[in-house]
Image (cartoon, rainbow, N blue to C red; front, side, top):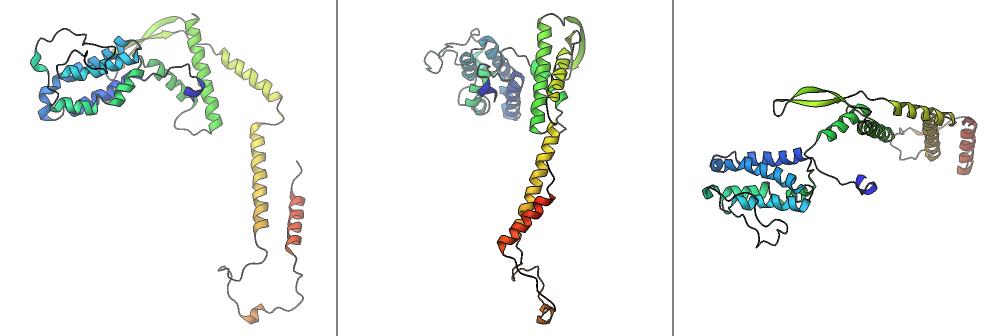
Length: 304
């Protein structure tokens, strides 16, 4: 929906989750004992992945080439003039190696497994869309705000969920607009402990926001309600009741007037039990039966 209705908005991936998956893959590869000599490459690979995104500054093709160059750098290849797949990056930006013995040949086990698990075609394409700002707090903040309007532990119908999502966007835009125009300046800082890095982190605290946009929505809702003949809930209940009556009518019309002799629900009886004294009721034609049922249904149908 976002891609179709808002083509001008560029979709960027969360860098923390992207690099976390790479880190987990490297840790899993290096668990084996025979991978001990290659463990010195784990941190440099992660740092080079971050550098590929930061130094590219939004250039996805350059970030992808720098990401693929890491695998070549592990094997001691630092120049890419002869490789036609590298169009923007011709050599590694770091200084000449001081200890060439740390590099691993391309046929070694570590470069092979890293190429299969980390430097995949999918990761080389996905890194083009990783955000260069390395900032995930706005995404986490709007998710927390959306959870307040539509908690995940409660079920909402589609129309109700869409309305709550729109309220979330209005609330978020109001907070950002008031922060940009200076009506909500920073009044202090608040500390909290980062559970990942076990460090104390400080974040800015702004002035409390006003809720004028809520009052505007409320007054507009009152005006719309005054022009309505009935509430949407009453309209929906009336529609469901009409459908129920229609289904009941069709059930009656579709039910056979005389059961079949092969119906297993009918108990077999003797000839003596079938004989009845007195007059037999006249047998109505199918057309007469339908007309009588329709007349009875119209008599019991309440006036709108």
